[in-house]
Image 1 (tube, protein in one colour):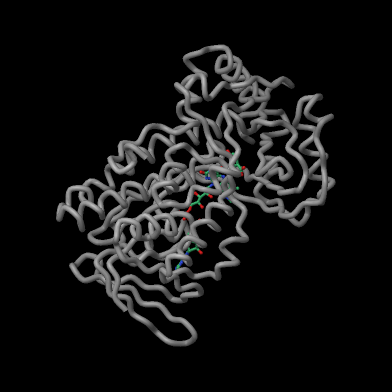
Image 2 (cartoon, rainbow, N blue to C red):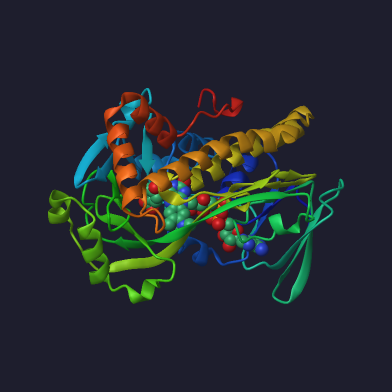
Length: 398
Ligand code: RFL
Ligand code: PHB
């Protein structure tokens, strides 16, 4: 088999890249280790920046996100038992975020890919990357006991944190920066109406909590938990009781509970691999960086990497220019590190840390008090939350 771009991974990064390249007339094949159903079964992100919506539009897959996504103009911060609204829209010069699940983004992209007749090989095992430091890279994989080879011009490593792409780079060519947090998030998805029409981020002495949503009838809630806990040890009732204890009295009263559709624990990590390009291999999304979910940046960063890669490959094939390819890693990493900083800061502000005790709690409450009462501090939160600007010629005039 031969293609222009071999994409490893059919998560949001790989699928979005595939669709954007297809629209630009650039041929691509996706190799995915899991089945399509498995990929769709993962419950993850819920908040999309405007830039992510613009990229979905450029890919021709924004119709359902526009129609069913919930525009949010603010978030609420809960501390010392009281909620305070941050006016994202007013403080960011008119921007907002859209609440629309990653599962739905993935489904829309998969359907568009199937409708366009593009090749995705699910359950591709033993994927291996070859010769990306030369001019003729290739990828091999096994399927149904047979080994196959895909010859290509470029490889896009969109295979997430545990993928093979980053691991294929020779040791010494990549520098990794990492911070692991001493807690996780226990998340629950349930068909109950959200407790509030906006997201609530709660700092409490019992730990962090987040009230999010997928629709007017489906809620997504999280509570900070310790890393040695197991999701199956938490009954639904225990989860709802713990969440209620972390809410203000009015929200606790309004909380509607019900059976969980999904329950899982996610560890929290900050991670960046530099650079993001190695010859003809590009890393994009979680393959190159991880943020703790507190700022809702992971999927959005994946989308902006893909935006830069789309631009670079269009320039390469259309204008015969390597400038975008040469600039890819620098352009992505500038944006990545700002989102890393924001996610680390928001995580540090909102969670209970085992080693800082009551002093740490008091300092957080003082910072939160400052944050909600200072226009300068609230503006900084708002402009980071809605997404920092991204210069991308292709998005002009959409
Ligand atoms: P993915 O989604 O991990 O997809 C990678 C794909 O590659 C496949 N793969 C392989 N394929 C072939 N060969 C191999 N050797 C392979 N190894 C792996 C995998 O099966 C998979 O299908 O990475 P991608 O596409 O870069 O997307 C990144 C996002 O999924 C991630 O950043 C977000 O989910 C993070 N995130 C959030 N991001 C936001 O922007 N807003 C949010 O509100 C938000 N909330 C969250 C989140 C992540 C969470 N968890 C569980 C980590 C909430 C949570 C709880
Ligand atoms: C979610 O809805 O899953 C979600 C929302 C906001 C976050 C993280 C996760 O910061």
